[in-house]
Length: 178
Image 1 (cartoon, one colour):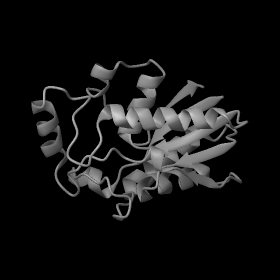
Image 2 (cartoon, helix red, strand yellow):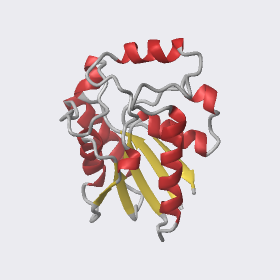
Image 3 (spheres, helix red, strand yellow):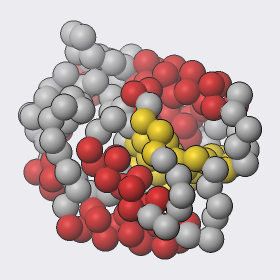
Image 4 (cartoon, rainbow, N blue to C red):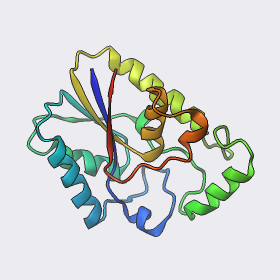
C-alpha cells in the first residue's frame, strides 16, 4: 500500500506563528494555503487514491477537500492524525520551542496534559497498523507537521533525535510503502 502523508496548507496561525492544538478553535487556510493545497493536488492528480484521511482540524480538512476535488471519495476523519498537544494554545510557537529545548530531552518533552513527540509517533503508528487492515492500494493522509515527521521516523527516513530539527513545508508530502 502506498501512503502519502501531506502537511496542510498555510494556516492563519502559521502566518502569526501561533500554536493551535485544539480542533474546536477555527483556524483556517489562508489564500496562500489554498494555493499551496491546489498546487500539491495538481501534482497528485494522476494518482488514484482509494481513501483520503484527515485530522479533525479545519486547516487539514480544507486541504484534504482541495486535494480530493474531482475524486469521488469521502474524507475519513481520524483524531490520531491531529496536531501534537503542545499545551500553548494561542501562544507563540517559539515559547514552546524555547521550553522544549531547555528541557534537555526534546523527544520526551511535554507540558502538563500535553504530548511528547514519542506520544505522537505512537498514535501515528497505531493509525498505520489499523490502516494496514484495509484493502487499499493508495491513501492520502492530510495532517500536521509533527504527524508527517512521525511518519518519516516510523518509515526510517529520520531518527527520533534529528526528527525535531526537521521542518515540513506547508502542503509538502511524502510517499511511503506500508
